[in-house]
Length: 367
Image (tube, rainbow, N blue to C red; front, side):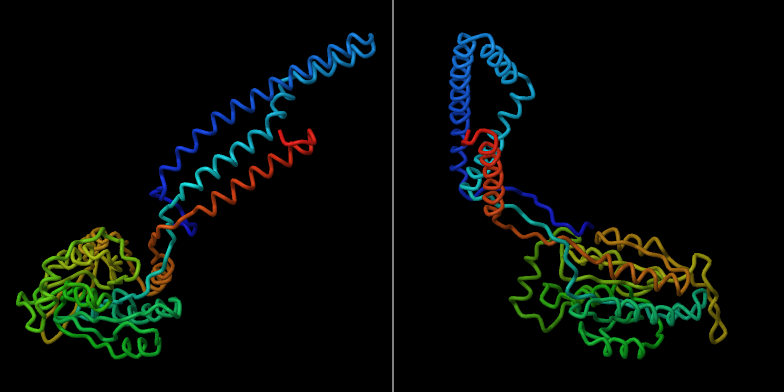
């Protein structure tokens, strides 16, 4: 995204005053009339000079020829063009123009959703997937501006908030260091828990999404707000972002794509980072073994639905690089309707002043 602001949705507060632009054709007519009168006076003076004698006549013919060269005619009207453009802008300013000014803005809060299921023991990413993820997450936290709040959600058979969004980086690092591997993988629950943590006021029945049973603690007003909630465009929320790091395998909890849709309906982008290799690794424990692979398709769909991006990390160094890229990319356009009358006035006065200055320098008069 560009770091420069841009304008869209251009409107006028007092559109009726745009009728004042009809004055411009009258001013152009008046200027051309004055110009023709000046030509006639100049021609009469040249004729008198020609009648006064051969020498004087030659001078008059030379002056007349200079007056009518295309270059002379164009430069003669340049000051009038500047003054006219300036007047147009000043007339537009009278109608009080407004525009939606869109500026790039960094998210105010970021939730890290970290997969701590048993498959994260795989060592296809050295020293193992979880250890590499922990170190990379610390790099990501260090890259965030001090005012950005960062939180942590862990995902196994159950998802839980390990650290609420905070600016205290040492608390986040301590929460990461306390992470332990567990059985099960509920990535959908992780997104839902992270969504509620980063947007605590959003109308969302977390218990019903995760378990199918509505929460007992919701008030009638909250239930009504959930029922009446109207989705916003995906990716439009400038205040919150979720970063999901996982191998993509989910075997319990709500469907991952259902959770992604809930985030999209609230405008929250979910960046997904796939950790592992397509070949995967074989895990053995208590007499059984299983091969765990990276499921990229599921993670790609989550990122696509929420208007975010998917990244794949096949090793620890690449994972740290991805987290540094994420720190720079987590911006979204924030729009604000702003009156830009002052800009029109300033530009109009500048152009008009330039035209007057040119006319004074060339003719010692205004037009």
